[in-house]
Image (cartoon, rainbow, N blue to C red; front, top):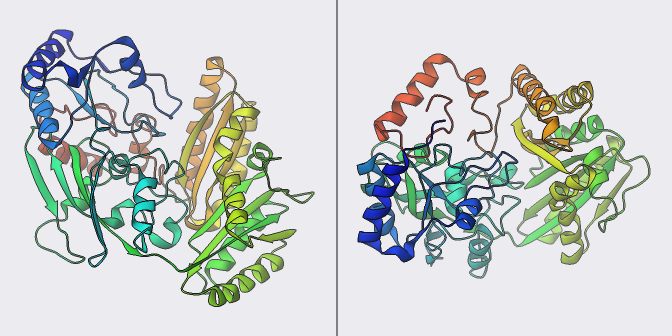
Length: 465
């Protein structure tokens, strides 16, 4: 996309120096480069200016200045996103929310927490657990990602199988609209149907409808007991069959994570030994009110695993062993870069019954272009992270061909192009394959209603805006 006129950026900078002071702004090469990079694997796209507000009023001031001078702006958190959502497609101002990092309140009696968008997800989880409470959404990057980014992308994670995703826990928002007005939407109570559900619209809007400056979150009581197990299978098909049988048995784990053969190779020697012949593993986790009740459920799950051909099931006996099993899952993504120097990660969703076919066809698409495809992720809800591994930019045309094939396969199987990473820049060309022209038209009209100048994170979600 065409970058914004530098003269407009200069006028915004002048206005912000006057209203906020120069200490809130950065335009040195190092800062611009840092804010032009995320974890998507896409080429870097730096902004023209970085603004670092200290409170909601300063966010409002920055957005108003951008709107007055026709300059794009992008809300930026920890830059852990996989879809290019925080990259400056047209340049402009990156609004870093790193200083809005306070847990404002935790109300155990109401099961509510109020936070600023720069709070790291893992920090909130630990803070509420000290009160005997639980915030279930758990992106793999929970120790580094922020709640503002989670809201923007409607993040999920392994526990989404039982507990749902970010949208299910956002009760209310303080929100700066693209013109600079600050509004409160939603509520603080557990129920409420007054007016339209704008919270549901804004969560997952990828920064295109404005910026969250305060988030009111629903909490639940912390489960008293947790049990974790890892089962190895010869094939992905056998592991996927085990997923289906577990979920139709009356047991609902809070996580059912699948790793294929390439993912297993990426974590070999990382603290958990897999039996000879293992071509896939399932990590399953159950939680509940007592160890005795969970043990009975776990025995039934282990029986199902054995009946579907599990080579071995390892049950964690203590917290240290639980951590070792989950460490395997967390190390898959960095481990894949040892196999090949680079990778692009997709997060498609297919019906659970189509997981074996999807993985087999993804791998075949990679083979057809001489590339390796690794697949792992949230098998319990069909959300697969399919990674195309490659060596250098010279491979990018082949990588793109594989991605195109994977998106077509996903939709053919009745799936969706993204389950939790968002459309961002990475999947602009694929959204029209899933959404009809009439639906895209409606979505674009909604965007323009909120943002007539299309300044809020332009170039994302829709290829022509």
